[in-house]
Image 1 (cartoon, one colour):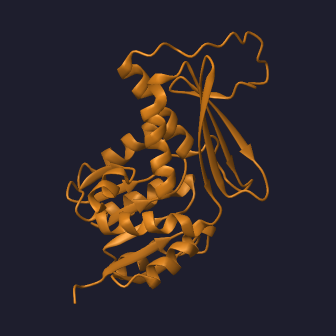
Image 2 (spheres, rainbow, N blue to C red; image 1 turned 45 degrees about the vertical axis):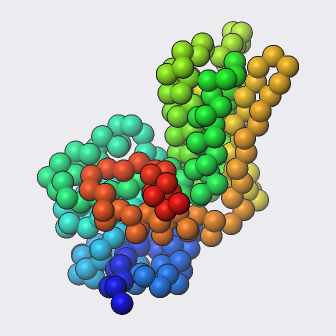
Image 3 (cartoon, rainbow, N blue to C red; image 1 turned 90 degrees about the vertical axis):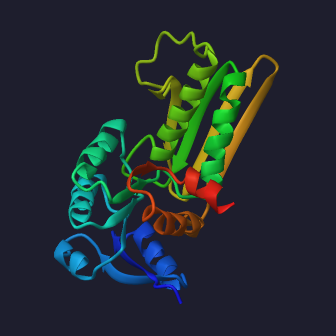
Length: 252
């Protein structure tokens, strides 16, 4: 039998981290060797000799966690929120001295969410207008979500590549930013509501028609197939990988 992948989890007592621990424990090709949370000694993580560490902590801690793991030669899968282009550049700098180590940062591990982003990028050049509404539970620390930012970036890139004009918008009085934050030319609106988990709508419009692409995650277990896919794939992908799109294509 092939040796199992030794996995450590940071943020193990959180909503996502605890789900990751259960998923890793149930995976026949993985072994959970460390489960740490805030206040635990990262030295115990290294002493457990994990092959891969999964980080679902908080934006204020994740960069130091990545640095600690990379310096120890441990591959990292990151689901923590708050990754801007500048933060991704920081990860690249951290990896500079350890080019053989892999770090995979995913805005979303849901298979349906990844497909939603791909579909949105495909549709983007064909419509005059586009907006994003993302809806999450009120315990989420960042807004807009990483998924919304990544979706907007993909849409903006597709529209620029196709030469699509900017979306029409005659708003001249928006004192309270009712039009949302503009990301890559796309207005993004964030809803935080008790009872929600993770949801996103991408709305496209042209004269006489609209198209809505929506994804809903009702349970955090829906993200686990993507997390496990990333754990299996990161060891063969040195450097920085953003998203699980390529891994999905390889698994088909």
